[in-house]
Image (tube, rainbow, N blue to C red):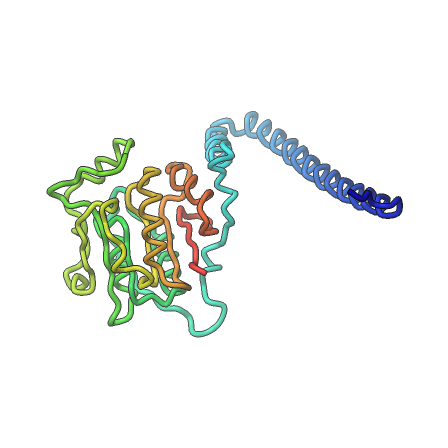
Length: 283
């Protein structure tokens, strides 16, 4: 094997040296930034402890919440690129119009900001055909149906109420309780039901092939265990057309199986700041 001549080796060494210097400069900058912020934080904590000690709980609460997002590298939420809610608005054209149905607060519901972002993603996909994993009470189902064109339709899937035993593992007791709860889709207004198809089946046994490549928008908000997140996401992605959008709810530190799956997925998702929504477009 021929060895590079002296001038070539010198160029290689020079290039490597420049790269190392750039890396070292970057690390020094990061270290200085961390030290500066650490000193500023220590100063402020001292002032709060002396002059307003009752607010230390507030500060530590936010710090603990932020640290939970990055404490475990395998579920480091900040590794998922972030977009602001306003980034979901179209860059040109007429302003999007949306209809929002507001319900009394229900457990495990989608927040108001998340509903707005969900509709913006729906509008971005120019959806006429929508599929939802996880009907629950029907809050998100209602928003999706309200914001489709006249000929649009939503298919929403949840466990049958007369046989709510899950085929895949759900270890969280609260998740199992929600899966077994009665009244799935009960909040959906009567006037919208003609454009909604309620499917009662375990998503693990659901055959997505009749929907393959036909859905403009898929919303994954079923069981949040690792097995179901993978099952629903992979089936939903196969159902999605090219250019369609899939969105996930509960991409957050409270549902680490969702975060872990998305970080390892081939979908290149983004997360919406201030929400637990993540989304990806099929290219």
